[in-house]
Length: 321
Image (spheres, rainbow, N blue to C red):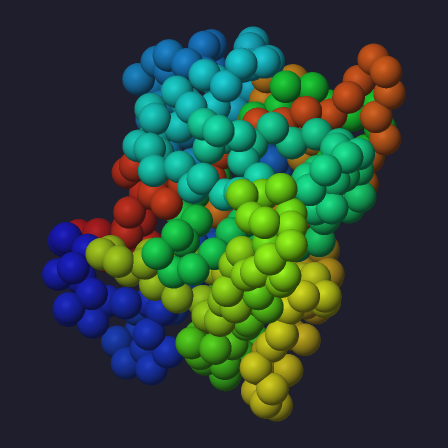
């Protein structure tokens, strides 16, 4: 059944009224196939720039079921082609050219001690709390997928933890559907405006020009056209404002408790050179790390406005047949 037809037929597991039991059926299907180890996400590949059909199918299959896959290759990928070409083979072409990315739209993540990058946590060695990428973007620049490729790991630390955002939705909805309803409000989470920095294409004497306007939006929303679940979230407590009502405060507290509880659905991994993760923008966090002269952590990051090809409306697999 096509995605649009299934949704018209009422088989939308994300509808909170759930009159036809769609949520329960999808929930059971999702949890039954959810990985319990990071190794369950792993796909061994040869050349990430030229995937074999079987390698691509294996990556897509994991992303269809879990919204993410981890790959291990023999290429550390010091050039940008490894990220760009791997993404293209998975249907990821619309790169998000954020202001700190390189000119080709792909970011090189490493510790930056000088300039604007050094003011942002991804370019430091500090830990990063739970988030999805691009939570500060406007709706027309929604980050639907992302790719991280490891060129070099840190001498110590730098491990990641990941959680399928659909699993987070299930845990929160099972606790209380009112939490999901509150976090689906169009103004549930707001990011304040960011002032333009001198030297970033603006006059240093022009005053507090706005580089990014305030962005208000939901935590949970559905992407067109297939109704895929999207999550927009950060656990940071600075430079963020939540809707000021009791329902939202309770929902935020419940979500934080889920993320901090170390559930069996949270998977830990440490990327080694040649490894990477490709995902439909799942929740993730990073430990702090220590570099050395021999090992200086460097990752390539690509963010996309596309979902991974073959994973559109994958939630409707629970209703196949």
